[in-house]
Length: 445
Image (cartoon, rainbow, N blue to C red; front, top):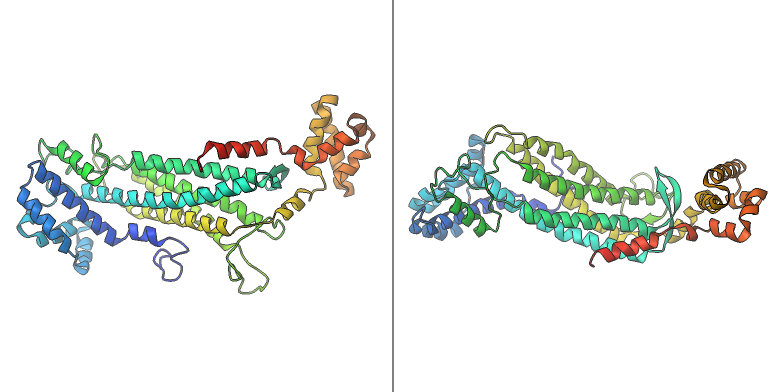
């Protein structure tokens, strides 16, 4: 059973939108679109008779693929294009002799594939912008919400939840920009005949190529890219990286929902994540799925990279892309749509964030105290002194502030007012709020 086609879990591991784009029905529709467009431009340039194109265009709306015959023929031939051309040519009668004129299987395969990628990119972009807008809203709303920042999983320094959201938001903005660049630079169609030299079309080959791509709304390239799969690799890497961006956010959110952290909760009602054994337990299911999607999308990249290594004008490794690229899009789109569900229903526990900030009895303010002492006794001496007092506070199970106040040398250099200021987390978030403002100002709503 494939999770992508399962009647039960298919929507956990993919989306109907991506399934439709990379479906057999869409493949056939794109083959039809490319072949009709090719006949049209070749007729306009005098490569094939105008009457042949008119007959092909007239017959096309009534064409229906014989799926059983098609499946058998594809298995026999090993490629899906020629069995399609044979059925469509028979349907067109005498005009069918002019179908696929001067073309090769890979022309139709690659151009049809690019049409699928174009639709997939547009679909992904629409939903990624939903995530972008939600993160922008969270960034602004939690600009000043105090929380502890963590490095290597340990309490580091005071920060704000808005700062953390701004980091996510900034990354998603960059991913939106990369998608826009992809749509502008990589959607190149393919036409050139057997090896890309237009030999079967003759001197009008380049004109046919340019007119065909204009008809399809694709880029006309300077030379065939049968054996140059960098464009596909660029698409695959960018889409997989978007899935990983979602997974990165999901990983932190999953940790934030842990009982011992408790800084956020996943929405979705009482049934979401219910344990079959433990009535009290609700697992954080959707963020975990997003992490899975990120990992699985990334796992497909080596396959696409392998497809870049081809010999001479082309070889068999295009099959890799047929398998891997649709899966990358499925995982990425599922990650994006599920992330939006997570963010839309996320419950942020600001009180628990503040409680966790104080969890170490003031230890996270040690750097603040050190920097207050540094101008008076030197940074190195201040570091040693505060480190010694932190160790004493941990050993004795006392708040750091109490240990500092009981230390004559500390109080000689700081005094109560300056020490209290150094121990206040609100005074040591640096320029977190300004950074949030900078991110919000740098990107249009």
